[in-house]
Length: 216
Image: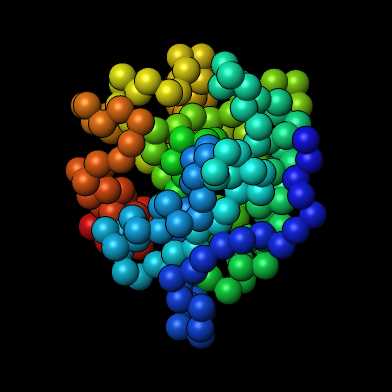
């Protein structure tokens, strides 16, 4: 399966000159969802940001996905690479228009956010990952993890330890990857399952204020 040759679909919180020079936060939704899903979170996050929510390119039931998943919630790294390259093609022109680019991904969106940060480490300020995982690239050399080892990525990772969706192998890989490549702020939340709670959003807002906006 390949990514369709069509213009990306995205919504933005402000699309005039007022966004120029502001920090940009990009929402990357989960499997089977769409660009509307995470945009509502912006009302709980710092107003200094411009918020951009992107629709994944592949149809998945009533929604969309960043890359195909099997019934075992597995994937091909080649499909991840194609989607990362397409997402970067959308975001690269925005680099010079904003003071920084931060990625916030939920579930499969966290896989995309961490993958893009590993693909373009010099261009991504920070990543917020909610109820998700980082991708194991296997033998395919598509990430610049060596650069992140030199300059670790600020990463907020929030999840429920009993998340029923993200499989154990993906959590174990992520737990092995974060120590050498990120400045990790990790929080767990009981009984939220595979979702987001208000306490978590407050922690995300604090992370963004501290790491991206430089507020104490």
